[in-house]
Image: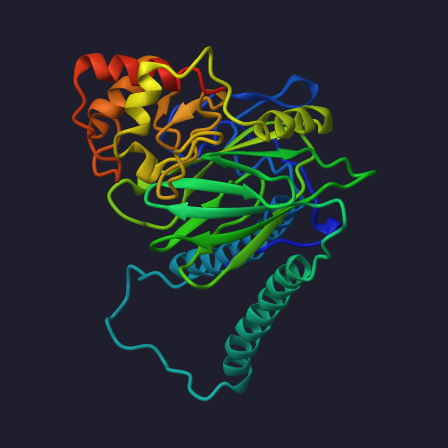
Length: 351
């Protein structure tokens, strides 16, 4: 279930050091030089995340009040009615049939539950009824074991693992609406500072939206156990200025850029099983089971955030994927050292 709501709920907290993911992250510099974790649930930067934060604080306040009252009554009873020194061990007089007490412990909890239900329903309804403006960015996110595929149908862009979206200026909102699909099993899309968790269920499209008001890198996680490498199915969302996003789209729309004529590495790549899974625009590679590699070197990581995108890691990934991501669906290609060097050199040209 995903919850969010209207702008009334917006609030900003800057509690630092609350990190949800057990992975090293680079802190972001927020407004006024604040250094914030890209997974800090107490520092929302998007309307859905602000709404969740507001609702969470409301629920926390209510439950904290209940705890304080119940705990205080327990302490009072222990102090007031503790066993006295001269206690003779007889049972004290019992009280039965107090209508006032019975009504109190029935009506009050019911009212509390109704209030919490209405507050939650209001937040859920407000996000689900959000209108999609004409200038909204549309993205189709497809969860695979164990990586993310992103398709921008209006922009003719296909990429993997690293989602790029524009910042949304409150004066001129540019929200991003994401259709969530699964290619295999259940997954869950969760970037804490941008939105709540939304599941990706086979044959059942879901959707979410976000309108981040601050540029930067935001990290997330597949929040639904989806197999061996669920923990390394990481999310990286790059929120860019409008100009930077347009530049990124223009670059990603181009066919693969290689240096010079077809290399030995490209020949090996196109004559092995690589092209059964991967696509490289402008070449015979047209696979759909693995990430599109057309602009591979424009990404900062490989294996869905499991390792930095360097030639050394690319070579290691092709030679033995399990050394980076045990249980991944990427097979070891069985290439010789010479072939590995050639294919790595070719992939390093795909910007």
